[in-house]
Length: 237
Image 1 (cartoon, rainbow, N blue to C red):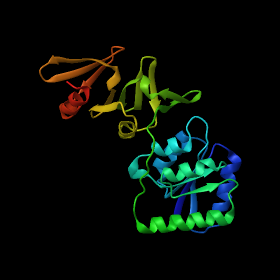
Image 2 (cartoon, one colour):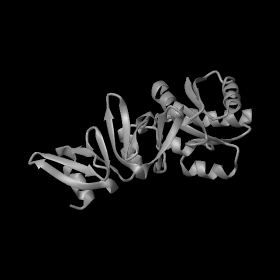
Image 3 (cartoon, one colour):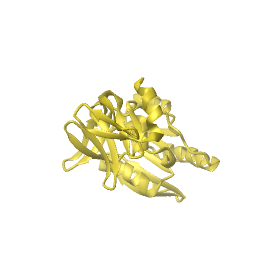
Image 4 (cartoon, rainbow, N blue to C red):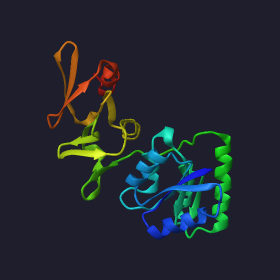
């Protein structure tokens, strides 16, 4: 059984894809999402084999969404678009396939044949995803996009992963590992912390066994011994 998740900000588009997929007995739609945050949560919870994602979505587009999925959870990705110019881009991103809207039943059937062959090989897909320059965060108004260059550090704790900026803290669905891999200036300094090297003002040693980074806004970020050598190399000290 192919477990599929459909992602599109338009309800009608999601319904149409679900209806087309329902004609295939070996496909089960385990999630239908209207935005990237919902999609990330669904991928983590359902661990689908196939992700059908619209390219042109507001705030976070399909390519950016794929960049935010952890490699160990990555399903086969098929991009869906109403614009021909996105087709080449889809293949540059190493998608399994792409579909043009309105999706024809026979074209979807050919796509599923590709997916079946891919899954039959038992290999996990890897995509050349772009760097993340705007990080989606959950807020009371919906999704807030925080510029990566504004993030001073990132902290993981019992309440989730929080971006720390001069303007405040913001909860994100992305993991430390994803942010470390996809945001170039964020580097690991502690098991629970990433730091933006551009915001480091001071490397302090309150005692011989302790190293603490100070950011421009005065935030204190711990450094563990495991990451100290790599951090010093990246800072050029």
